[in-house]
Image 1: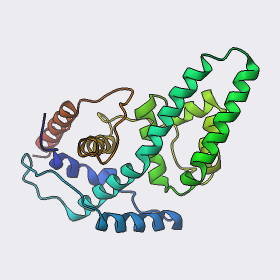
Image 2 (image 1 turned 90 degrees about the vertical axis):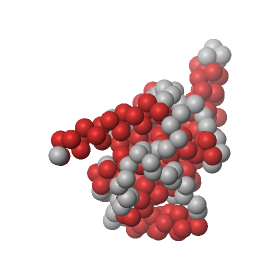
Image 3 (image 1 turned 180 degrees about the horizontal axis):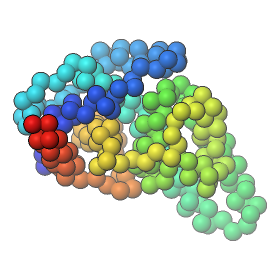
Length: 228
């Protein structure tokens, strides 16, 4: 097991990944300030860098810490969404009549509305987008398809927030081998599970963290060669 996260890769790509961190929406600005305050009070554990000799850029480090704080905040929502989907599918398979299914859907809708509506309203756009990715990580289904295919309960999950979060891509998928931010998220989750900061729920398509780190390390080397 690789003991040290390839932080050199992490900070190589952060300029692209976090270039749009500033948001004109006052709500998002207030949330970001709160996140920065949380970071100051929290201990951010970054593994010792042995692979890369490049000193992390302070701004890149701050953006990584912001991402980490956002993952900590929204992962429990994604975990609950996956649990609810599994329970709903298991229950629906046992129901026979449309009347029973309609009644059950109403129960799901009320639960989702009461449990998540007010909490989701407090998320920033960036937190919401990370949540969409993590829902796909945990369920293998995009939030867009959850709403389209399962309707009732999942519409309650998002309907009261979609208007404000209009720029969130509900079709976004979690792709840690293609998207650098997703790689960073997977790294953050791995360390959070190991440390006990977050309770792990197996994703629908588990990722080998060692292989993922090696992939991005090799990609970093290739890009460096092209520059030189």
